[in-house]
Amino acid sequence: MEMPNICILRDIYKLIRDFEVQFQQKYGLCLNEGMLLCTLKDKQYTSGEIAELLGLTCSNTSKIIKACETKGLILRALGKDDKRQMYFKISDAGLTKLTEIRCESDSINELLTEIKK
Image 1 (cartoon, rainbow, N blue to C red):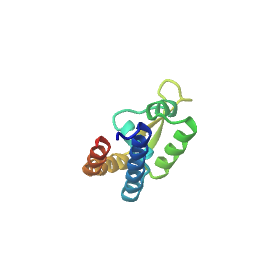
Image 2 (cartoon, rainbow, N blue to C red):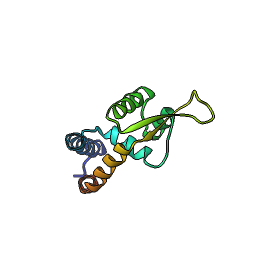
Image 3 (cartoon, rainbow, N blue to C red):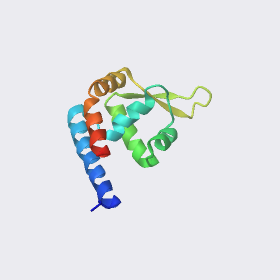
Image 4 (cartoon, one colour):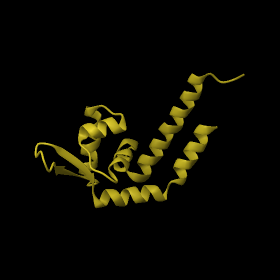
């Protein structure tokens, strides 16, 4: 008997949740903080742009930004043309953390393999 799609989604959700717990224990970041670092690795963005890119609410995005700022992983920068506009960019510590995460990509590959099953 074929498994209903909702059961497959439940299994995928559980795999991702378990991965996030391990990710947080290993790197001291939640998955959204890790995704924020990936988003900022090559370019700076406003909080609204970050929210859109990560698919998060503005409120949740603000919390993620604040957490990463507190950890010294991202920096604020004023807009060049409009000083009222705030941009966020990755810090040197953030780049170091992102490199650390990339070196451990085997666990992400394992997760993707499990999801494909």
